[in-house]
Amino acid sequence: MKSSGSDLLYTKNLSKFFDGLKALNGVNINVKESNITLIIGPNGSGKTTFINTVSGFYKADEGHVYFEGVEITNKPPHEIYQNGIVRTFQIPQPLKKLTVLENLLIANYNPGEGVFNSLTPSWKKVEDEMVNKAFDVLEFLRIDHLWDNYAYQLSGGQLKLLEVGRAMMTNAKLIIMDEPVAGVNPVLAESILDRITELKKMGYTFLIVEHRLDLVLPYVDYIYVMASGQVIAQGVEEEIMNNKEVIEVYLGDTYRESECRV
Image (cartoon, rainbow, N blue to C red; front, side):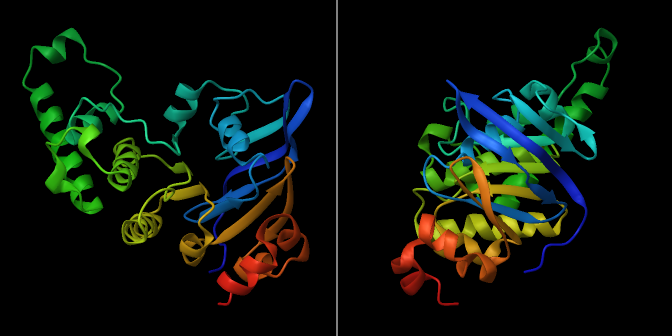
C-alpha cells in the first residue's frame, strides 16, 4: 500500500523524560488522513509512551503535537477526545458490569440536556437515534448478537471489537490502538483487522502499535520503527523489512527469513 492523504496528526521533536531518562527523544511522526499507520519496535522503545503523550495521558517535556493543523500539546485527555482522537488500550477497559449495548451508548458524547428539553418529546427521539446508531455499529462489527451480554462475558477479541465500537460512537477522526490483536486468535484477529480496513475506507484514520507483524503488515499503509525513544526508520513494508538497522535491533535474521518473505 502507498501512504496518501494530508497529515491529520504530526509531532515535532516530541520528548518525554522519566527520572532524567528520555523515553522519547525528539520523535517526529506524521499520520496521514484515512491511512493505517503502524509503529513497531522492541519493548521499551517508547511506542506506548508516544501514544500516551499524544493522547494527553502523559505530559510532553519538549516538542509539539498537532492535530488538524492545531497544536494540542499537553491538552488534557478529555479535550483531546472532544477534538476527535480516541485511544484504546492493550487490555480493553470497558465497563464490565454493563451490557455491550450500554457500553456503546455511554461512549457517545452528550453535552447534557437542558431542563426544557427534558420536558419535551425531543429527548426520546435523541435516545432512539443513539440506540439505532449503536445497533448499526454492532452489526458492522459483527457482534450485534452479543448486544445484551455483559462486557465481562466477552472474549478478549470481542472486547477489542467493543473498544472499536465505542470509538465509532464518538465519531472519532483518529483512533489510536495499542496492540489491537494481542492475545487474540488468528481468525478473530483477521476479523478485527478487516473491520479496521473497512473503517479506513469510510474515512477513519488509525495509528496502531502492534507486535504481531505477520498479521498486521498486509493491512497498514506506512510504518515507523522506534528504538531507545527515537524513530530509527520509516517507510512502507518492503523498505522496513529490508532495513539493516531494523533487522538488527528488532526483527532479527530469524524473523526475516521465516516470516517476511512476501
